[in-house]
Length: 465
Image (cartoon, rainbow, N blue to C red):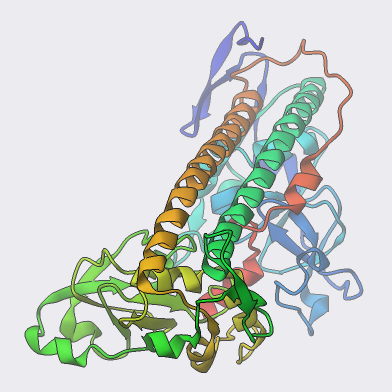
């Protein structure tokens, strides 16, 4: 069991209150030099990410912008350097695992003899150190730039070198264990999400009556369907991008209506948050919809990821949102909730993604694909049974998903807290025996594809759009 150090002394900075009495504290400028070398156009291009550190661009495949000119102006980075990137105010300073060249806008820090790279690697990603980074932000937009001139004059705790080495060994060991647990839980999430999709696919494509006679659908991807189901295109059971003009006469220009930006719509069909705006401000230049409509994101990657929602709980009778939405309105042949389940089919998303048009990163699914998408459609009474069946199944799956997500959160919080407590001397690990272990950090990080893995080049692309 970990214990506290015997004695402490005050730390003369706001971001940290105290450190062990025998630890030193030094200004960053005395522990690091700044690397400003340029003129290495043949070195591999590097990117900075919060989860992978500073790594070759190839690890991100085509997710980043490829620099084609002025490579001699990029900064040289060696293995073991630290890089202050555009996202450092959120996720800490990144460690360079590879040699190469990187944006000249970044600051490259080279550790001197008194600081162990592994120790600072943990300190630089700790929550408490990120609070220090936030104090050193400059620029028009929050987080635009970390002023190294300010940062380098701040103090950081510096344990004796042998103690730094022990801290590195301990944290690498414990984080390896925790990372393996997190990775196992992430695999559970993937399996549960696949099970969720399969439940919808099986019920909507095949029905829920196992003894029913089946027939060939005549649709190349669909196969057999229940014999009594007609094959219909979506334009036969709903209106695509239906108008609300007949509803506007009962509204005044100053009336408040629901507004949904894309970020408010999640892939699981929930509306994270909605806002209200004056009708006069949104009636032109936005998509419009009504209560009980279904909205489907048409732009990549939102379409492939399943972004969309059934608007049965829309706060107002009508609403407006991003033009990147396709709006479906059910007719008497289909229940709105069932129409929404159709839009969640994996074949609907995959086939739509295959025929998207537009430039890379801005592709959109054609509206005529939506209208001409064909499948077997049961009558309304059977739709009700399928909706009820799917809802019950998904309730159980979603409870399991919520539990696994909570476990991942708790493991991640433990990991974050442990790093901060050890690198700042709240916990003493000097006498801990470190066993042999397998490092699972890189393997876990290879699975991470969330927003936190975005590089600064990707952020630049988003801001330009």
